[in-house]
Image (cartoon, rainbow, N blue to C red):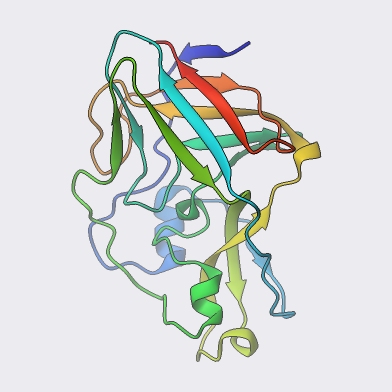
Length: 205
């Protein structure tokens, strides 16, 4: 059974519109203060692609927000709480630890992307959202792993264990997004089984 609820959600990322450094941006966004660190220089590989097949079974056109292109409109809920899947939730610039470990300077960026990236879902149509089975968290990549002159703040992709997932949540915009984010937003809660390769999600609004 799929449950749908209409309630306001907080913004899933900040649209800052200027060059920013990760620590300042994370504070501005009210980001997670817990940052992982290590010196083993190992990153988890992406998993087999999982597909969320989203169908608009309702009577209204809705929109799926992708931030500036580095977010996903899906969260998974585990026993430890809700985990967003987009890179932006590990770094407000969308900078990954793969980039940092390749020696790329990711210390600043611009996040002003206007309307942002979103997908229009008209009644009776469907889209597929692909996910590599990782959720992202803030990470400090040490200089011995990156070859850079300072610690790099990046989004670390961590594989999500199927045994920890309770359900998943799709964020839906009832109106055209700005900056790739919803104001307001709806949610569709649905079951997910990572032993499969896809999950069907119905948007009934």
